[in-house]
Amino acid sequence: IDELLAEGVDGKRVLVRADLNVPLADGTITDDGRIRAVLPTVKALADAGAKVVVASHLGRPKGAPDPAFSLLPAAERLGELLGAPVAFAQDTVGPAAHEAVDGLQPGQVAVIENLRFNSGETSKDDTERGEFADRLAALADVYVGDGFGAVHRKHASVFDLPARLPHYAGHLIASEVGVLRRLTDDVKRPYAVVLGGAKVSDKLGVIDHLLEKADRILVGGGMAYTFLKAKGYEIGASLLQEDQIPAVQEYLRRAEERGVEFVLPVDVLAADRFPDLKAKAQEDPGTFAADAIPSDRMGLDIGPETGKLYASKLADAATVFWNGPMGVFEHPDYAEGTKAVAQALVESPAFTVVGGGDSAAAVRTLGFDENAFGHISTGGGASLEYLEGKTLPGLAALEN
Ligand code: 3PG
Image (cartoon, rainbow, N blue to C red):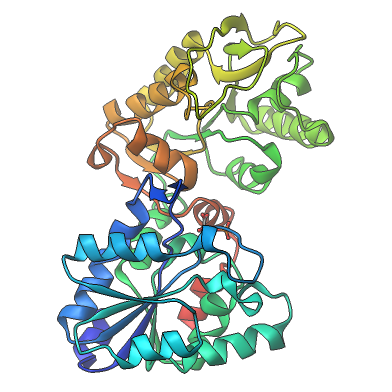
């Protein structure tokens, strides 16, 4: 983007592909981190006199307009954060979008409606995606890719549109890639990785890759129970991906062979049902050894001994990457494990990276100061796929 700003953007229509996919509860944004993250790019362009058109997806609507996934709340929040009015177009590439863009003066900003209200955005068919990209291209003179959270998606606005316009990377993408390089090239050791979240199947690629890179892998969240089961433990009614057990056993074997320490929970909080996240009523979980969860209970957080163990494994690390909560942190009774890991990262002198999505939202909603971490990524899936060493369509398109 510095190159673009040096060339000058005064009066040009610059489309910024952002990731404004923020969590919403009853239409209210519960974490605006992704909107704040794109501000430097939007501000720099507006200050330089560009007509800024911000485009993003939100959620996973089915390729047609759906009011539950409107970008309007995100556009309003962007306006508040910019301290300037932001125009909002009620369609993405139709008459409203053209009207909003045509109405922009240099230095002004418009947000167009959710890209995924159009089936062409996510289509697997190159022609359909290309046609939608053509319609997006008609709204702009220049493309700036800054939606780091979506660079792993081969979608029209991420992959096909940059090929149709002069294209540049925004500040956010540049900074995210700079940070993630520190986790792949010349990593300072010991390198500890904490993985959580619900499904082990989402993390197989990254585990496979990290077995060659990391010194320690700590596992929590729903995915931990498949590991515990793979070790032959009783996990009661906890989340289990039975079909993944052979893969998990293979990873445990490879870890041992390579001298990578795999650390699993030693105790868990388990209850007889999943908590009601809306009511947030007090639950009554018990603490159980990780190899003796009663048959009618499900593990919902790592236990206090595991929290201490994980903190001790992080204390002397020089680099830490964390992706995925340790339990159902949205309920206060099951947030302690995630808090313990976040606190260990805050206290650690290591270079600490929190990898997007739920873990980024968790540290902010649990009240941690985001400046206490080395970096909080805006990309969940994107940061994992980067660490897996995959080619990310949105980055490849910008490099071309
Ligand atoms: C994310 O939340 O990880 C990004 O916004 C991408 O969203 P998606 O997984 O729906 O493509």
